[in-house]
Image (cartoon, rainbow, N blue to C red; front, side, top):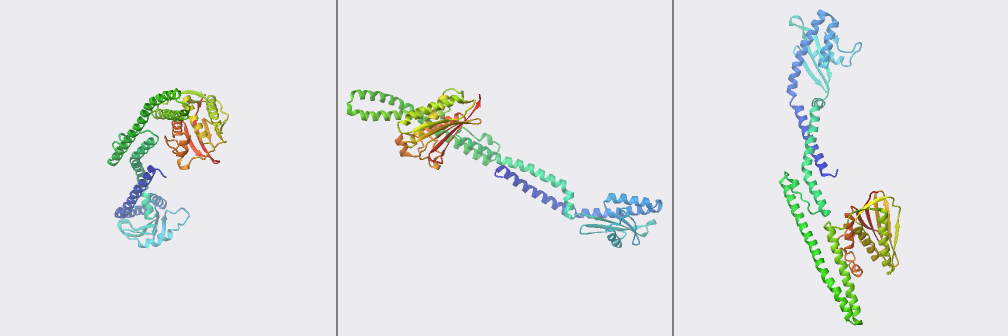
Length: 464
């Protein structure tokens, strides 16, 4: 029971139920006592009148009629009755031919009978007796005794208050449900909003949804919205800066390329090596600018291209072509790419071909860059149900476990010196992450058991 809603609900329900039931039992057990005593006194007197009627019926109509009347009175009172004369039972409500175990108790209690009636209770046995009056209102030797197995006081209260207690539990449950919903709803809204921010949606705001809530929740909502607005402004400013700087750098780079060619024509043989170095750095800078522009477009939701229903066979051909290009380049550095394509069947992948190509190419080039000399980069293409999966694994040193979650962030370089030597700027995998998500897929990286880094891209498939 980790949910805040259920915790509030259960605790509030228990608290309300305990208080309601306890108070109800206390009132039921204490308050009606005097009233019950008065009721029992009236019942005993009425009991005497009924007994005298039994005597009159016995004289006038006979034993059978009197016994029938006695049974009727017993049924109304839900008690066992005995009509006793001088210590001898003349009539009773005992089953025919049987002697009740309580007959002895009735005979002994008959001695305590008075014309006003006498009543007491022994543990769970309630008993009362009254001396009946004969013709003319004179005392007689007839005594009417009533006995019954009564439940304990607590049992009597529970029996009498059962419906009320059930009602208390139900009402407490409904009130607790409303209370839990009232208290947890704004927190759940804040949690959902924070989750959207964690996924990159900084446009979310919670203040409109919290209207009508408590002052504290409204204040928290306003602070949350202010934080989201500030984060959105900072991120947008950062993206704009990268985009503008990248655009502004393209023109100087183009002019630098023209100047470089003119310098080659006019310079002697001794200047060729420095000019080659300038050219390599300019090309590297141009590639970096292109990647930054691509990343800013993906972040802005403008990936370019048209979404097509690509059969999985065409997607496999796309991966095959990229793998062949990377393998050709890697062979010059003593590395190779091994491609394994499984049974794919007949299905479509809704994709932007160029963007998908860019994602696969970035992963493969990244793996070839860090693979040890003389090793292979393994690329596997498989279909699992309605999922198209591309797995790329190198046999390098891998990535520290604590940095696995960060390698898809822009400009994150786990091994700084090595990245500088190989020319990586930490943008390639960030582009992969955005591209895969735009295809409604997922990408993850993990260290392989046998060494090296494994990157898995998974894409949902549609029916052919």
